[in-house]
Each structure stands twice: as structure tokens, then as C-alpha cells.
Image (spheres, rainbow, N blue to C red):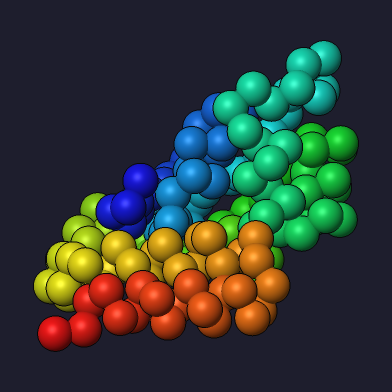
Length: 143
């Protein structure tokens, strides 16, 4: 999806709920959030992409730790590991997410789309290829 996706999360974000959050570009949480993928403990595999999205955010050892042990992360741990972009009081969660969305919406949509594309596609490229992609996308939006 070319538009940025923002998740506003609170409470228990487990299983498929966490997997959906992992597909979002930005994750803003309240301080009471608990993340987890308990599927292995239940005798099943995550079925909505958790085995693929989690290692891309937490790295191999962090993803294996959560997936194989069922370990859960607090808001602070998730923030420290890069899973969460921002922690706010629960009563400010929606307001904060809307403010972030408004900030992004105030930017040129073509620039936002191309920046997201450069980052996402560039992750699977060499640095040289990523720089070339960035240059091509930059030329598309120059006036």
C-alpha cells in the first residue's frame, strides 16, 4: 500500500492482532500495551505473516525469542527494540495518532509515497541499487 499506515495500539496486542500491527508503517502505543505471538505455545504457526514481518523489525534473535518462547513485550521493551515508534498515555493515543497522520497528510502525497517506496524496496537491494532507486524516485517528483 503506498499510503502510510499508522497503528494506534493499547491493551493486549497478541497473535493476528500483532501481525496486523507489524504490517503498519508506524506504531503508536499506550503505556499499557503488551505484544506477543503465542501461536507456538498453542501448537500452531502464526498465519498472518508474523514469521516474516517480525524478523524484519526485531532482527533474527529477537524474532526467534518471541516466536519460539511466546515471550511478550511491554510497551517500553517494544520501543527499545524498535517495534514501537512512540508511547503515549492511553487517553492521548488517538489524538497522537491523528496528529501524526495530519503531519504526514500535510506533506506532498507524491513525496510521501515515493519516500515509503524507496525505503521498503531499498531494504531488499544493495546500497548501490537503493541509491539508484532513490535517485529515480526523486526525479519523478521534481518540478
